[in-house]
Image (cartoon, rainbow, N blue to C red; front, side):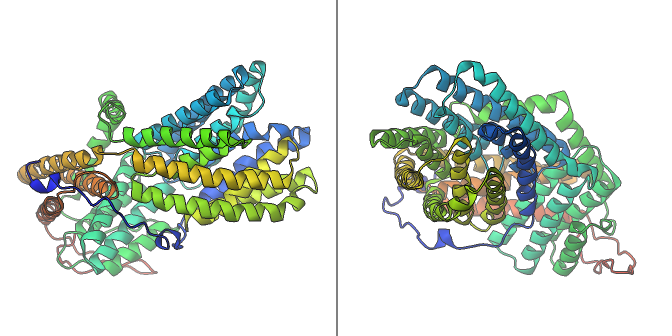
Length: 568
């Protein structure tokens, strides 16, 4: 960039917030889905092993059961592939850990392998955008397996248990498709309508960016959902209205919210009024969906994934932080004689977010949650030792509680995760409570200190470069959208969706770079100008679609569309 502002340095002294990262938010509207899924996926193998008298094998089945936490925001077609991939990744990491544990007892080697696995898992999850809970579950399982007694001949049987439990988790995650096939798409579209209504009610940069991101996510969900159905056709039309509301002079937020409520409910999807060009746009969506599913589209997706992990990737500095921090935490705990350095490795691995500012927030949340969770463990331990069934039920309860609470704030979920992780040790035999509590507190503190130190020292100067590339891509997409203004509607709609995707990526890159340390200042004025120009282009191309056709008023609770005002 020629702008001299990009060569300025940010101040080295940063204020680190203490209260804001610990504030509770609103729970996710779908918090119960991963919570119930992991309980069901865990209960089947847990109770089977309880009946067989082999609860000592729970650690291997739990590795597969925890895969039920993934993919709940994806349409079922993609969810099936994603959860299957997570199960295979879990088995691969576990296999590497078990083989290493069976070949060596050197703590130095085990910590090095654990840190390397954590870095690979972090980079893989970030590149594939797997979403929460991200790599921390994979790292928890592989790190714990590194320090478990193991013989090489036992590895195949233990991996078979993991794959069997993973198959149960896959069935639990994909089974709801038999009841409500378009459930994920309906939730994504309803979210887009709600956020578009918020933007229409209170226009501003933040609400506009949030609405653009939600609309883009809804389109991506619909494109990945498989063949179009009548319900999906109605959902696509609703997204067209949500997108058009962002550029309308007189949007109707009440109508958008009413549509969102009906879309989220179990009744029929509302049918919005027809708009000029909608048929062409749906044809363009079908063409885009076919291109994504074709062999050329799949090859392009694979090339994009490989580029995201290439030598110039912006993900590599975060992976380097993970490797450095996990190794430092593990070796520090080993030097102090702590018997379970993998707890420190997992603590450090769980901290790393997109930038240093977010990593600091997670450091506070993880430390507070773990320390409070240790107290909860000490209180519930006597109850869990009353019998094997009590231990199983306690683990299932904390699995549910963790997912129920973590969407409000990470530290609150950690209060439930910590006792669950400690109770897993009880399946292999009882341990002195004081030893478990003391080791966990020490590992938490040392892991958090070492992890954040690595995040602060391992710089990510590529974050600003990503912003520059995003600016160039946004300018190119805006030019293409302007050129497509006189082309057929399907091409114009495709160009507008591409521009929306570039604007979302630009904002994400800017937000990540803004929280990084030790790098040149961002071109704030250029970012603001690019975003304004992009949204003006979106508005101009949307207005060329013409006013919507006014539909007749409906009865029995259906939503009557607002008068024609150009919002469509």
